[in-house]
Length: 213
Ligand SMILES: NC(=O)c1ccc[n+]([C@@H]2O[C@H](COP(=O)([O-])OP(=O)(O)OC[C@H]3O[C@@H](n4cnc5c(N)ncnc54)[C@H](OP(=O)(O)O)[C@@H]3O)[C@@H](O)[C@H]2O)c1
Image: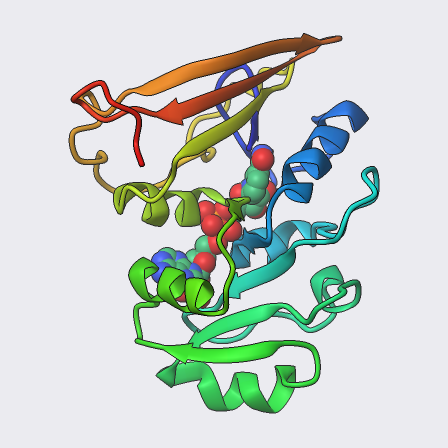
């Protein structure tokens, strides 16, 4: 995730564009190149239509995973146009028929339980043989994986802007605080200044002080 100096990950119009540099995009591709799976949030795709295939690093593209709990997702997004392997689209009983009728050509559709539980998503991904997963947000998806303690590493880019408007999302979005947020530390493992941005890496430490498995 990239965030402003005041911790925002979106502009006042609800989108993220133009605030991170080309160097950040290159860095992003480097992180992606070591992943087998990229999970990208539905609202992020609707709002930002992100490019998910690698442009700055020569390496196999990770496979995109989409989570659509309700309704559908627009077919005209880049993720359905540029891929080596069709994106995997997890949906529910409720929207399976509609998704199947519209997205079969451009995705591999897998139906899970109605709330799309993180455990089922991960189990399904693991069953397909994938192990290295990069979650690219947005904040709602970050939250559901963080609250299940399924995140081992955090990559944050601090961009040199202040927006100053309340109610813009930060990297994790939820109605309540994460359980034991003040017990579960993140260990700062790398700080790198590149021109006017800072690239931060954190690893999850458990309250015992031992690294997460
Ligand atoms: N600065 C950055 O690095 C960065 C990166 C990414 C995104 N962003 C910003 O973040 C914004 C979007 O964030 P967001 O938090 O609104 O959305 P999001 O995390 O991109 O997507 C959330 C949506 O995913 C669907 N979903 C599928 N399975 C789910 C589950 N098990 N639990 C919860 N939701 C599930 C839900 O929609 P349904 O229930 O309708 O299916 C939910 O509303 C974007 O507009 C973008 O600008 C910034």
